[in-house]
Image (tube, rainbow, N blue to C red):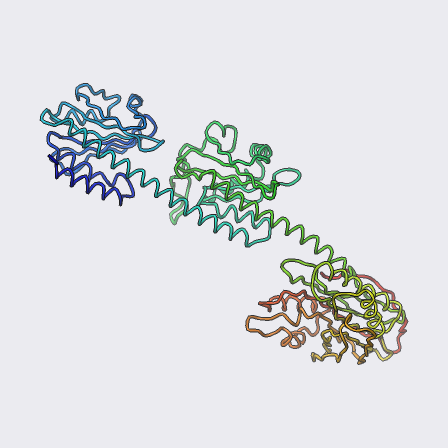
Length: 614
């Protein structure tokens, strides 16, 4: 005959198990139906960690609506013999034969009118086991009671397994989300140290309580970043990362190991992470002064993991995680390997970018003059801003050349495109013009001869350039002679604050054979300033679409009275801040004519060289 009451209760129990987030939530649906079984006077369950650590005990007596719950973490050595294997075990034991040393349920059972304890012991997971038992009297159908216990335990085990599985899936989803976010965060920076700092910040507290990141240099591990959930411990962690010989030696030994290693307990003896399992007190400031607060992290034994950061076949560093949390919350080795791989690739990309950046800037420097000539007649300065985030070598160039007649020639140009070919053409153009102008060649002839050289070399790129000469005059002014080959027109900032554009024209260089270039002449007075620039300045564009060219005269006029260095740097930074789009390089060459007294000797003045601003 089917027991409809128990069958209904078992059905409700399965339904509750499918929704439960914790096994303890099933207690009411388990205890009450078992207690309603004829002959049952007490239901008691226990939860054990390891073989002998009693975590808690819960009991419900017939006629009572309130269970007795004992939360504890005490060791019961004699209970180790009760630990089950993989399969549940149902046992009948006379209450009188229960030993208090191994059976914490004994005291409760002796208070009930029963003679037998029917108990099912079963394993929940690798960390511990549990038991569910009932105290019955002689009227009980013990075989039926055993069957119900076994069925209830089946539901409990299935519920616990489902909770673990759902937890794993949730953890896997959270891990995947964290890895994706970590990749985005780390890949958004091409600065090596910033990338390493982001690795540490992303991992704490989601992955660990603390993190240390080291970069591998030729002389050994170099500390870069540390972070911890507690500010006080972060300072200590930073000192460990910088100075601790135990950690330095460990990282040096593990520099070639690919697998993540976990260290705990005796493995940390002699390290700065040892002996942190004891509960300690920290002080937290409030309005009334300092008050003690429990350091929750310190209640768990410290565990550290070390993952080698390896990318493209080489080791770039290591990341050390510090855990002060339950074992169940430690990340898996597979997750740490994946995080380390992503971090290593981001760091390696940043390192490669850094190497390329240094190489490109070094090459760019060699394409530009390291020094500009200076006398008491001219105030010269230049500015160069690399605009391409990928750092291909740009084609902008400038120079200032003293001439035999006492004048000075200013030149600026822009080769179409970027990269090695543009760099080669840049070097050819600047040095050709410089050589010709040093020999006294007039600007138009110099540009024509450069055009002829480009055509003879079958250059695949064109370029623009402008050459301006400043020749001192007996009345204290200077004759400005300008010749352009398709380049943006120079501007003149007069001493009264007005700004005018120098009239220029001419065809691009390297397009047609036998091109001639005409010159334009005008006078400039003392404290007038000539500004030559490339289109990276004028074509800097704001979000609304307007170009910096539209406001350049106003911005230049506002710089009246400043020296050449300030004008060059200020215009460069203003254009850089103005643009929301546009990545062209910006080059400026600024010359302020200081003038000479009327009737002074106009022979060439002694020259000095000053380093250009780049």
